[in-house]
Figure 1 (cartoon, rainbow, N blue to C red):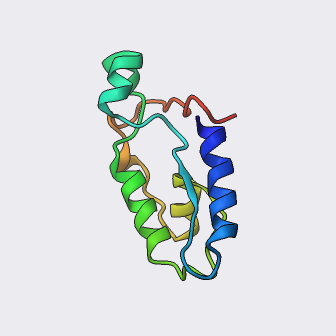
Figure 2: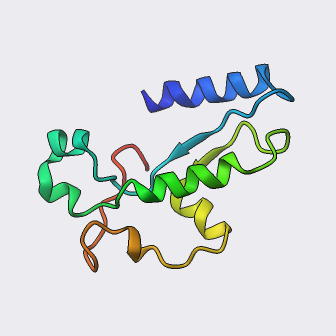
Length: 106
């Protein structure tokens, strides 16, 4: 599904260039959600981050100039780091715990 969404993002970015931006945003680590609880249980969620990191990254994208920022694939952590964020511990579900990479990142 993520591969398909990536292709859609590229195609729509080109189709709508100059009118609206289309970008993709992926999490670097697992994100604590109800869906994750179904797939991996609470133990897996404790090795992830809260949805706040994705929301903060989305805010960065949405406040960029849409004509200059389209057709990109962003990772939440990389994007926020480029914006000067250095404290990622605040996003951890369980502080100090090793993080589990997102299932679809390699």
